Amino acid sequence: MNRALEKREIPRMGGSVTFLGFGALEIGRDWGLGSGKDRERPDEREANRVLNAVLDRGINLIDTASAYHRSEERIGKAVSHRRGEYVLATKCGEHSREPDTFYDFSYRAVKESIDRSLRRLRTEVIDLVQIHFGPDPEKVIEEGKTLEAMKEARKEGKVRFLGASIDGELAKQCILSGDFDVMQMEYNLLNRQNEENIRLCREKGIGVLIRSGLAMGKLTPRILPYMEEDFPEKGRIRRLLELTEGDGEALTALALRFLHENKGISSVLVGTKKPGRIDRNIALLNREIDGELLTRAAAIGAGD
Image 1 (cartoon, one colour):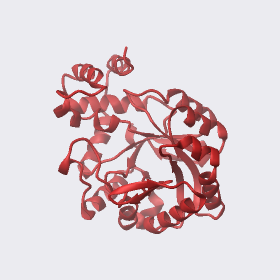
Image 2 (spheres, helix red, strand yellow):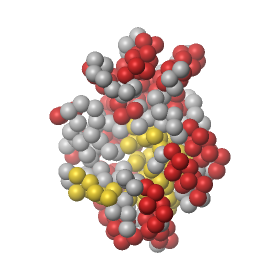
Image 3 (cartoon, one colour):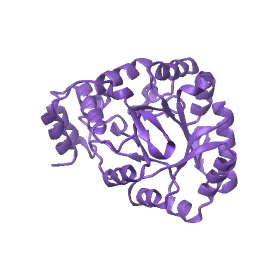
Image 4 (cartoon, helix red, strand yellow):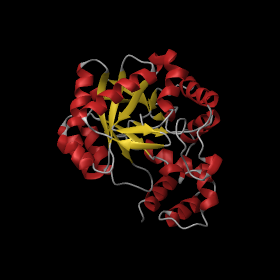
């Protein structure tokens, strides 16, 4: 079985997505561990190669956002001619103003944002639009203008399903509201705060997209040069690396397999700037891992 391409159903969407999804942040906006060139987005040609490689490998979910600077535009240029091959998700509320972003959750700003996303993505309909919450999510939820604009866009046929990218108690509030078909949340070996929310989503047929499934690179070989520095997760990562005998790729394999074991997760969004990394992530997901080793890794990640 190819775990990366395993299709997981999202009942409220009436369809399924591959367990490994593509997070398109890094192809449009400087991001990642390190500094300088390590954080720079690829040029347009390389972004095109990455996006087509994603689809060539059979991954059928691409997640982007209006705040990811060039990401939507590059998706439109590179793979809009293959639109039938992927579920397309984007976000609204946080907007691009390179090199920065800004927040505007008003009805008008969100409606205009969705229209811009449609043009940039070169599509007639976006499968999933998610609220890209900012520094005051309680206010956004309470005022309801963002959700109102999203529902209007759905009524107009511009959007098929609605989602929210948020964590913790406010994520639970969104789940229980019944307004959302998909939740995007942070969850990984080192951060379990949304475990109950994932269970609740599965119970209600709501899809779960995982962001930071590799802890923003801390559960990959990229963390190795930084292990002499101080950061909150250092002790647990060191213990995990002891399990893998210092092998950073084995650490990634453990992290991905940990997520795969949770049947409430629909898809894990993993980004990259390089086509070859897609193949490597698929291979790591399919690596055989001893059950006892996985249990020990999960306990270490939880702080036991």
